[in-house]
Image (cartoon, rainbow, N blue to C red; front, side, top):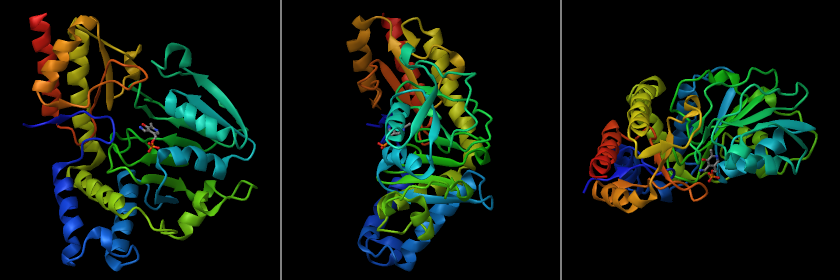
Length: 355
Ligand code: PMP
């Protein structure tokens, strides 16, 4: 039975990417060796790393603008600490839009003063705060572009002279932005890029070298940059699959083309959530709704068993809300086809008719 994979991450990847990855695990580049049993210093793998770095910069339109791309380990969670280690001298400004922002704030507090410029915590993070002030003397401003758990997404980013640092784990490569506004972007692979195990970090090199503390080698961006992301053994499989996914995105027309499909998917689902009297959206302000993760609830809990049963029969997978907020969450990452969203909408309408 065909599955419709709405999982929040790890999540759906293009079928063609899975196919090629499986082949490379058995026989990579016709070497009669597996991708995961050859040296990361071999010509074949070095080429993978270079292609992945270059594709990331091409997609973000950051080539020849002083940016470099790294593929590191430790997940996006490691970046909560690394960003502060490398950039926080005295104080930093953070926007608190949910669990992941809070975790970033917690790590930064170990290294300096943190100014929380605004927070939506009192409303269970169901909106994105706006019109806050960022202190001009902060070392950087950190925000989370898409809040995977709550289904909110920043549409605008503040204008500021200090470096803009952004956790784009759950919406990287999903929409066009002026990425050159950012000093540092990081994203765990396991949403729009590839399997868990690597994290893309894109850094404008000029923002580094401003802190006085000694930085342990593995946490030091400069060390990784000097070694072209090969300071130690990189997670070869995750980097390879990420490279394939970025190639797939390029062949599909790049971010501008996928953004159109993402807009269509989000419009289809949100219009059903708003039309169908059985459901209500979790996010309080429509303009803050995420195009990647749509969060919603059944108004009448008594219908949960029926709805869940229909979802299962339709082959819909991974749609339960995060354990911290409950309800439902339909994640519509780049590789999810519009057709899967239509199947979900059909189930919502079937349950409405039977209610
Ligand atoms: N930031 C965001 C926005 C996330 O969605 C997640 C994971 N879902 C993380 C950070 C943490 O990522 P990781 O598990 O790779 O450390």
